[in-house]
Image (spheres, one colour):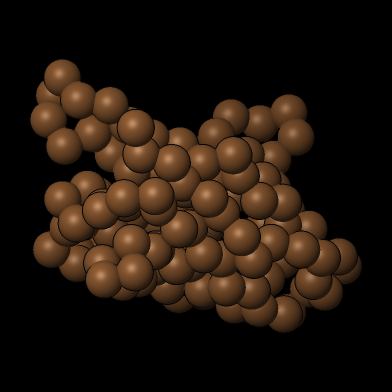
Length: 117
């Protein structure tokens, strides 16, 4: 059972930066990893994903302001967020997507990011 632990959230002023980390309890080498966020009263939405091969994709709302990366040796995925906006305020979740159609997607507990105006 893979466990994911997010860290790096906090309170930041608009225009600032944060780097979120997601540490896995085991190897995530074969998993596509993702960062999602959920604001109060809203559905969880994709922020960024990175495949096992290193290909990335981003939500339009963070394109150009976010960078997802992974360090497979450390079983860790990162999300660098720059030029933060109040609308980026949300709980940010890390995911390890299922490797096979019958496999399991794992989720962390989330880390709160609050951006003040």
